Amino acid sequence: MYEGILAETVTLTGHGGDPVLAYLARPLGAGPFPGVLVIHHMPGWDTASKEITRRFATLGYAAVCPHLHYREGPGASPDDAAAAARARGGVPDERFLGDAAGAISFLLAQPWSNGRIGSIGYCSGGRQSFLAACELEVDAAVDCYGAFIIEPVPEGLPLTAKPVIDRASGLRCPLLGLFGAEDSHPSPAEVKQIEEVLKQHGKTYEFHTYVGAGHGFFAVDRPAYRVEAANQGWQRIEEWFGRHLVASAEE
Image (tube, rainbow, N blue to C red; front, side, top):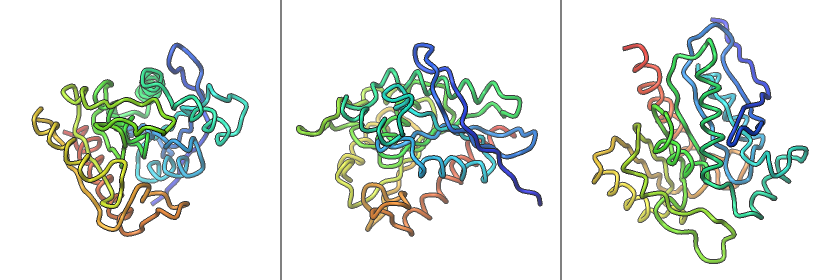
């Protein structure tokens, strides 16, 4: 069977009507394909984030990863833009939601879209994936070790992110959470607290915590990478999106 993907940089209309760069990867062919919003981590719109975006294309999804730090350095390298964003305390939630909404609209407007969208994020992007699932038109979401969903940022960390657990009542789609037992942000205790809130609101979710894994266990280019946890996590992601973005569209 023929396999091929197209991967390229595109420009989206983001928050406030601003142009924002994004990385798009999709299978070649007419589709229809489900869409995935890939939310990069705090280190930025980097090579690893683009590789994840391409991986979704090889799995049959049209995936787009917006450059959330673009405004901090339109002509700068992603590393420099990320550093500038961190110096300002990170990406404001409303700005993120505007950029994410623009990415979702972009995917849904394409002739090869099947009309269903998932979101996935890592680290700060995990928190933002949770936020998108509560505020935007998303059909399934994945949170990979998103910190500060329920606990505030510890004193001394230069981040302005606030807890977003108060938005859990508005969660619009099934949520998959993948966490490390050795992580401190979020700690297993925090994950349990989030789970209790989701239970109270009657939300559809599935959480998995991997023993021997800490923060960033999906990151193949970092010492935190844990191959067994990452492989199991990817299997669960494929099953989750397959169930909610592919099978649901065919019903």
